Image 1: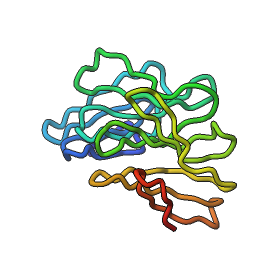
Image 2 (image 1 turned 180 degrees about the vertical axis):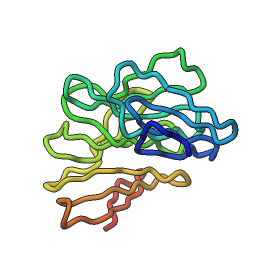
Image 3 (image 1 turned 90 degrees about the vertical axis):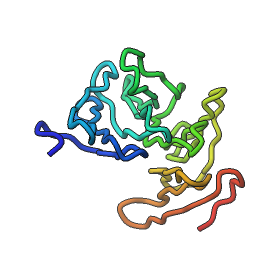
Length: 173
């Protein structure tokens, strides 16, 4: 048993050595040592954690004055503060790193509807990937390619899973 005080949204690190999960903040459980470490991200409200490809950082969403924003946090240097990645209007959540660690895909309503966006970490540039009349969300960037999969439609009923190659920005249904 990893947590006796609750927890949700568990996610394995790519190296298979750790599990990050949410209680009121982000916690990391080491498979090797059995130790649990709280990853301080300020006040409570962190959700939707995901790992960097090298298993050294976590990307997560955090409520900032009623809107979710995307942050990253090193788990190797816990004294360093979390870094805010997304800014501006809109609710940003469900983030996932690209395989090379240079970009983060996420869901946002910053364009008016829930769509898929990418932020380039080198310069903070945003790319809106989808622009549909239905809800697009829960993106996942495959670790061995530049493919992104996400859910589109109007939950809980009419939905589909879509995959596309980010380099081509051509969506395959």
